[in-house]
Length: 429
Ligand code: PMP
Image (cartoon, rainbow, N blue to C red; front, side, top):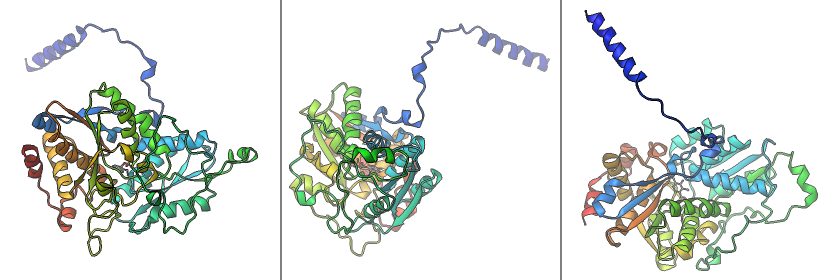
């Protein structure tokens, strides 16, 4: 009788399924994404519910960690390569090699887009960044070279430039097509702009390639220095991508945009576009402790904010936050300096607290720069009226930060407190 009961149950289940009426499904060929590159950009904008509900101000995070290479840098890698291809200095499947100095994200993006398009990749990294980034790069087939963490001279950029030159670097013919509407900042001192002054390496000259040379380049392997800090393709990736997407996703109903700056491409490109579309919008920089950009925005002076000598942590900027914070004005940052209205300095403890708070309350597992951005959003929200809306960038996920920012042992060893109640107090203050 038991087996009869089971058979009957089985028959009833199948009958139930058979009775579901077939629904017509629209067949659309445009739902197929064209390779990995087709997945880049058009990321969702997420309402961060815990913070928005507590503040009465909507905090919206652009989920850049959903890009196929796991970060906002996929857009930049793609634009840099496409612009170089459009200028005829890069040709896929010729054995050409992309060179870049990076703390990780840009390297992973260049390796991802590079493989998809037919380029090899050589990445120079400081030897103190989270080890999982090196492991991902190697799995992606990139060659990784590690240098001392940058102090005054940016070793990784200089070595990447040198390696590219050794491989026969082809300089960009023209700067990326300039948009006549884009206003170039005049606030940055020219002495602060560009590469390290103490660099012994020559800067890549911007020359025009003779037409005769072009066919030879189409078959010859070349080195190409992506140069994310100075290459304006970075700015345009955000000016033409991230900015317009945020404007569309919010229907222009937005009061502020918050971003950190590493190369400055995100804050400058997105900020410039949004400010032009919405002149009353506030652009706010979230800057980790030890970075000089906070002082540049607030007081128009550039100086380091934290004693670096004798500290255990060695990083270009003395913080556990990776990817943002810098002590020079890059070309990409300079392009947007005029549109930045304000800056907040975010401590490591606050960034760590925010990351832990978001996992508990929202199920969001984010990287260190995203956490910094969200602390700045909360501080800014306190100065705006209820019902306001702030958008920011969720640059990458926590999985890129397990051995440092997300490691309780690492934080303890470096005297960085892990105390999510900091965020509770900040929300209530
Ligand atoms: N977050 C992460 C994780 C990054 O790797 C970077 C890039 N260095 C940024 C934020 C900053 O973006 P940008 O270079 O556009 O200033």
